[in-house]
Each structure stands twice: as structure tokens, then as C-alpha cells.
Length: 289
Ligand code: GUN
Image 1: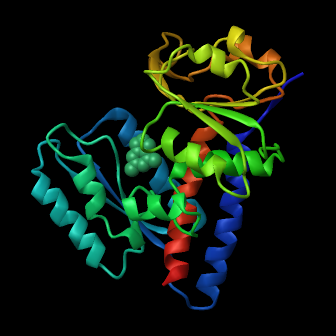
Image 2: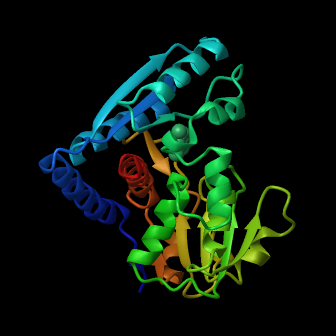
């Protein structure tokens, strides 16, 4: 019988740990962490993500600031907003919600963020620190996944781990994090140009699906007893839902789960852990000061 990796529950536990630390800081007169978020445009998913991040801040006792900009904002104006946050001593860390409109270079924006305030851990300096195993901010989703595996005592050392998807914010950094000393997995990163993805998945002890294709991972690709982590969060039409849509993972849960030892649900698996990572990085930013 498979067991569920409950990201919502785990995220709640970590939030309590963070809230305790914030309360202690407040008691001893130390600065209360302050996270800012820049939201460009009004993409529905981004609106929800940012609203949740702001809500999380309130729940652990952080301060938060939301900076909104129009879809057609010139890149230079966004860069100026970033410089302002970089230079504001009251802001400990901030994020620029992705994706950005076509006319703005994501790389240029990420590089403009002060690495010491990079709550997402996306800046090349922080990615570099992660690669060589230095302490620092970690990208939110990869951190959330590794933390889930740790807290559920799921063995990673020497195990065959296959990550599907090579995005800069999930697949690629996760493949590095999993293979670092201390986690010690043997990692294969498969992507849209990989020949015969299924053959790689069939020998995996741990599968992480992060490609954004609903139901991509099917039962015929699973080794008995595998651990399956589903990062997918695609909105698909659902007439029975009040909103008219529901979140779909990259894994065909109903047919895959019976073969697994552990599996994450969507929603309530990786998503809440991603949000917690942001809080972790923000707390780290204020503690490092
Ligand atoms: N868009 C999807 N995931 C993320 C994330 O973790 N951070 C930011 N800034 N944007 C995202």
C-alpha cells in the first residue's frame, strides 16, 4: 500500500518553526523579516502564487510588501524598482514573480537582484554557491522537495533518481541538489530531447516529474516501490469546480500510486513546500545581516 507525502502538513510544521524564531526575534528587539514581491501584469496563476506568499508572511509574523507593475512596463522601469528594493535597508529579501512579459529579459532581471536579497535563490551567484555546496539561499521548489524527502526519512543515498524537466527553477537545480554530498543520489536528468524517457523512469527508485504536462507519467513507466514526486501544477478545465478549473499534476496519480512506496498528491504535495522555502530564505537573509 502506498503512502502519501503530505506537503501541506510538513509545510505547516516548518511554518510553526519559523514563526517561533520570528517571535523570539521580536522578543529580543531584533528586526522582523520583511519580504517584498514584484508582480508584473495579472497572470491568474501568478496572482494566486503571490497572494499565497503574502498570506504565508502574515502567518509566520513576517512583514510583506507587494509591488505591482503593468504588463507593458518598460524593462528599465522594472530594473529601477529592483534597484530601489536592493537599496532599501528595511527590505531583507524580495522576489520578482515569473514568468515575465515577452519584452522583458528574465535573465537580466534576475541578475539585477542583489544576491544577498535573492529570496528565490535564482541569482547566478546563489546557483553557483549551491553547485559547489556552500551555505546559501536555495531555489524554492528544489529545496522543498529535498526537505520533504528528508523529513519523511526517504533514503536518497546511492539511489537512482530520475528528474524530468531541465528548467532553471526546478529540474536543473534539483538535479544538482540531489547529487550533492549529504543527499548523495545518482541523478539522471531527462528532458524533451531525451530518447525513450520511459526506459530511464523504469529503473528509477525516485522520480521527480517537473515538465508541466498533465498525466505524463503513467503506470507502465514505474518500478514497483518507487517514490514519485509530482511538481506539475497545470490548470485544466473542470466543470464541477466552482472556479471552472482544477490543478493537474504530471503524474497519472490514480494508476501510478498503487505501484509506489511514497507519492506526493497535487495539490497539497510540493506546492506548499515551495512557499515555505521562500520564508526560509527570507529568515536566512535577516539572520545573516
Ligand atoms: N514562478 C513559478 N515558480 C516561481 C518561483 O518559485 N519564484 C518566482 N519568482 N516565480 C515563479
